[in-house]
Image (cartoon, rainbow, N blue to C red; front, side):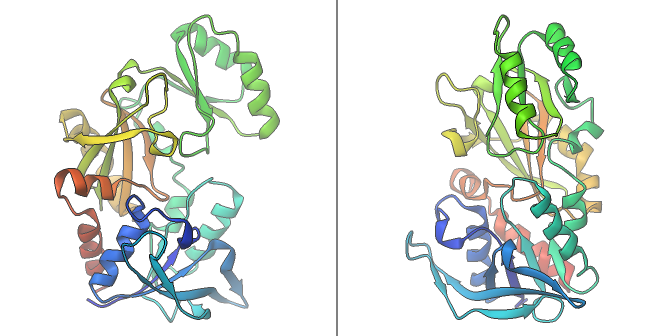
Length: 314
């Protein structure tokens, strides 16, 4: 089915064509003769009852540095001129992100927006797992210093990180006896009024942090992200190395538990993070990993995504 697709994303000029999931989705859409436009969240507007975007038509090719041929800028009426909008800009999940989701919610019943912006806004990636306490490591969401200190006293070896961070930024491990907790809390509290995530450290992270991809609530496949030596974080943004991996019984149990919720909420492309069989995050904003999964296993997540999207539109 030939669809008209607008992609709300960060500047396409900056993407890595060998790693970027949004770019891979666009390549597959183009291969299916879909028309493509790109625009940034700053170019999205609600104006006198219409939702519009300053967008540019684009043709993509897998040549880094010459990967996007952009046409002349035009104004798209997102309720009339396109069939599908991909909301794919990276976090942080701040008020700008949430405002864009609020605006796109106004297209419900007119244009298919994925992932569903109402549920993206209402499903922060470190908060949705709290609905499944049996699947996650011991966790505290709090800004209360006494509560954080009591949690550390109980579990001794902990991870502390921003509630709405991404890409491994601001993630710290505090080993038993580490005297930096007070300084870290001062730093975090000076930066924002948000609570923090404090979790028991999972030693299994040294063997990797598994990224499991789901399409419309069904598991597609997994890759493993291994941290560099001496590093706690395994995110590929901070040097984690992707490896081939299979779905194991823990992954399948987690997917069976959360899959129906993801499907019901219109969260079509989702990436979950699993360490030592424990769910740590449910990524619904701009999950990554599809190119690595295809290289390791041949599984084409993008093809499955567009199959599902075509069914939803038709």
